[in-house]
Length: 286
Image (tube, rainbow, N blue to C red; front, side, top):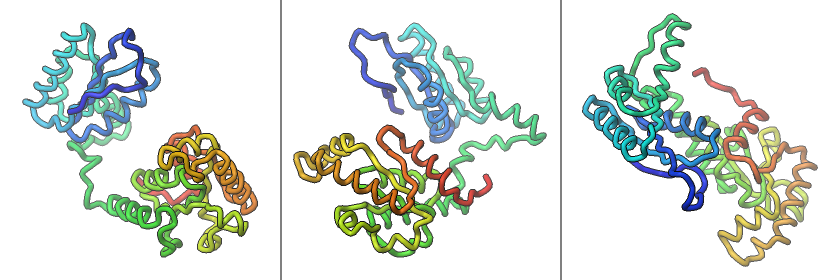
């Protein structure tokens, strides 16, 4: 269990954050993802408490006790996002003094009626397919992305679903790993460096795979800030050098006809979604 504050710090005089519980019979990732998406619509602070692996009646009663204690302490109902599958567990939780958002009760029952098929009601089903082909493909994609990070390897680039290019620290590595972990895509990435700008050409291993290239750029000011966190006061991090590299990289990508976007104000999720729309990889059926 962890207890974290969700959102930016506020002055001491600010109202007490509302408590939110994420309760699950598995890892709780689904409950948290949905809960964060909903809570992000409200400009206020939330204290989040994770209660994963609530897979017995005893644990469900303990979770209910925690919720009741929060109510008594705060004087207001905590918000509870739950993905408990078994009815006997979720009924214990619903008896607690919280504002309950039961994802399975809300969505599974209507789907059963529409699909005319009963759900499996299997605990942790979304995370237990370790031996599935999709899981193996995802692990293979992660290994590929790690091996092809920052131009480390030129081998098997034909297997890549996408090859990201851009100046150092423009967001290529985290985006590559996100694409691998979330979508099972084999994503390589290559830095564009001053040698490339002087030649006016892409790294020699990339032209045969131009259709797979996607560029990331960033404002010089933001790039300088990021680089100074790593190598403060260096020429590499200077604003003048960052302006040079960004301008040259954008010019090169335009000349080569490479699709690109700025990562300056975009999240990794937004960047990845744009890349998926552009490269349109073959999608597997769920």
